[in-house]
Image (tube, rainbow, N blue to C red):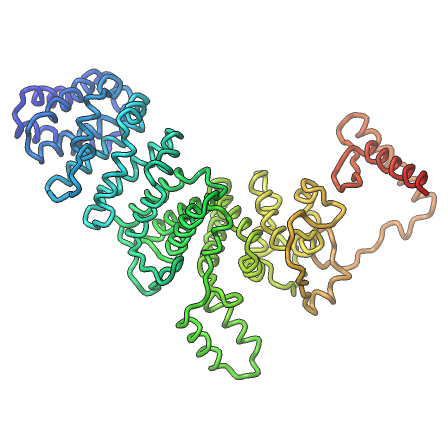
Amino acid sequence: MDEERALYIVRAGEAGAIERVLRDYSDKHRATFKFELTDEDKRKKLCEGIFKVLVKDIPTTCQVSCLEVLRILSRDKKVLVPVTTKENMQILLRLAKLNESDDSLEKVSEFPVIVESLKCLCNIVFNSQMAQQLSLELNLAAKLCNLLRKCKDRKFINDIKCFDLRLLFLLSLLHTDIRSQLRYELQGLPLLTQILESAFSIKWTDEYESAIDHNGPPLSPQETDCAIEALKALFNVTVDSWKVHKESDSHQFRVMAAVLRHCLLIVGPTEDKTEELHSNAVNLLSNVPVSCLDVLICPLTHEETAQEATTLDELPSDKTAEKETVLKNNTMVYNGMNMEAIHVLLSFMEKRIDKGSSYREGLTPVLSLLTECSRAHRNIRKFLKDQVLPPLRDVTNRPEVGSTVRNKLVRLMTHVDLGVKQIAAEFLFVLCKERVDSLLKYTGYGNAAGLLAARGLLAGGRGDNWYSEDEDTDTEEYKNAKPNINLITGHLEEPMPNPIDEMTEEQKEYEAMKLVNMLDKLSREELLKPMGLKPDGTITPLEEALNQYSVIEETSSDTD
């Protein structure tokens, strides 16, 4: 009934009446996302009628009302089929100022029309394959970049930037060809990075360092939304950027990484918005070549160094341990480098673990990022090692029991999701410089068995990557407890009585044969397959492993 009345007024053609009836329709259906099938034809005709009105010379307020209703109707995919034409798309492009060659956006009264037109385009492009094809034909990505350049330094038109960026994100998500066009032809990487700089109001103190005001106000909701949309669009543009081929690419990625460092050190208007902002920053950092991630840490400034000296001078000269604690915990400093951004990433990872759900989507990106940073950058690895795997003192509990970051990560090593447990184990393995003996000290053999089996390291050794040869130092508490630590569980156990000590030789032989028969039965019924270690440390069926060792022994005998 609403559609029928609105359609009648729209066809009548009087602008004031059209504005009133469409405003009523918009207010009533603002939250409508599912529509009645019986009124589908009426909604299609209403869409066609609205496009006919939009080509006329009508007041701005009437244009806004038309576009609001069109945005609501565009949520229905079936309605879009007959109205998604090149002519109608061009109408929306004109209203969104995407066809304009003028370099300015001066008429503030037109801003609501531009915003509503961009919203309509977002819905239509998302819901219509025909619109997606027309977007390529009309070179919509280039028009959107041109509009961004007009308003990248204009804070009072954040809504225009936000929906321009959202449409750019949708296009690059739905069409892989547009990603390449954005990256190279349209210079999307520096453009979107500048949009982020503008949203964060960054002031550079060095080539890759920005001034951070920890006491400054949080980002506004509009700035936060713009930044999030820009981060999502940048993710699509850089999704295949694993290698840097040119010096200019390397410089641009370092600038972007420095902007993302700034992003991690600021907050949004709410805790949820801050987490969303940081989550998108983490996703984008995963696309940055690992060689460019060194800008996430930076040398201490003169002010920070002076503050450290003042804090340390206040402590007595004999309080060495307290000085080290102040240096590490209060300022997130390691080896003269500011580690604030890395600490934020670590805290973000721990929050995602504590959520206890959606590990694959929410946790694996930040774990993977920290793993790659640790593998490539020594200072980052050593800082994270201090934070995640501090020297062991109390080994009375199992490694997976407790509330520390180490305990939480060790629990993930036996998670049901294969991808989650692999990346958690890999992160700890890299922190241990890929040394099996060091990993087992912190996790126990049982928790690490999956990783070691996959890497062919069940017999011990170390991974393929090279790390510095500095040795880990064990605490006196650990050295004293080490002889009694259960290597499988990784914790201190009281000596247990051996049940076979009181058996006679005949009883021992009987129990041994009983066990052999049970294993043989399980093997013949294929409920259990005996496995053994090959000389390279990987698992294989026991017969094959024995054969390989026999061949090695024969070869060795022949050589002798």
